[in-house]
Image (cartoon, rainbow, N blue to C red; front, side, top):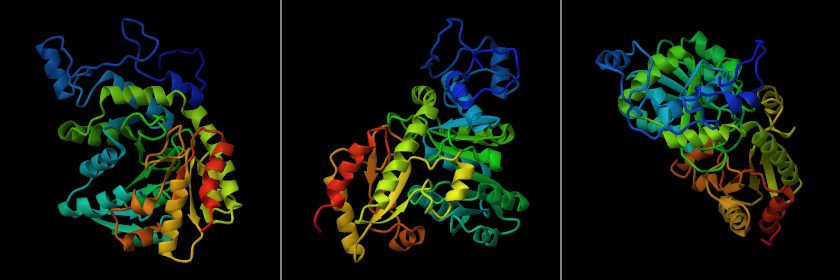
Length: 406
């Protein structure tokens, strides 16, 4: 921590987001420094040997140790309430690192079937090539998670909460208990909420995954990822694999995320307020068949979401347009997207700018129709990541398509 206090009272997360970092350098910079260097000069041969062996702290090579990246990791870990964090090249890189470091041929993973499309492909198809098996279960059915566990083989439970794009919320504490009773670990993707709303480790999660590309940066500028957890898991098991595999976060991208974290709490409160207002408006629109948003009382896991997410619904919602069949639903969904003039048509999220996308043909487009159906991804589903624009402007932008003659 850069600033010292006389008492031991814990700092508010908003303060941690601004202040937690490595100590200032000899130059006394106020904004955390950006160290654009591939390697670091060692004091002498013995010191170099000690650092390479891990017997002495110090920076060696930016593939696995850099002061700017370390500041970001330290700040994020403090916000998540974990002992350590590790920056990665992307959110998918973070998941890949977890699986490479913790799993081997013959091991088994239980995963929510409602997670991000690329995660489904990675866990279910890519790692199957290396002998890692996976079972996919309904996100909210704890009994299904329990039934899918294979004693002695299941090493990892993986969930998003809320999920992308249907915003399903899992009971983190219940899944943590299941995992630990089976001798497995629980990893939770906290991308949609960020530590400003939800800290999965407080509910028993062993690893917390982030796509820093989203709310941690907050302005759509860089690709970044991170994993948070105990020092034993992060430094003892994941770091050695990162050092070998090079799933590395660049110093510049780490610095951008570090700066983004300073306003995380402020942004998320504004995002959540806008999303709730827009979700309530969508519920009243005749052309909308259903709205998925944890902040709405109609959401099946509303009470659980309020408990886990600091009483906030988050910033991402999805809704289904009313249509007679799948072909009509797809056409209507495309028409709504094409009628917008303000919302950005992009699959990214977490930006200050509101984005809109059709998951069935973008983020989940690589999945088969059967997989999409199992995940609840219909042709009439649209996902909106609500930004910081005036909500009235967003309503008018969406109304143009929703109220157009069919």
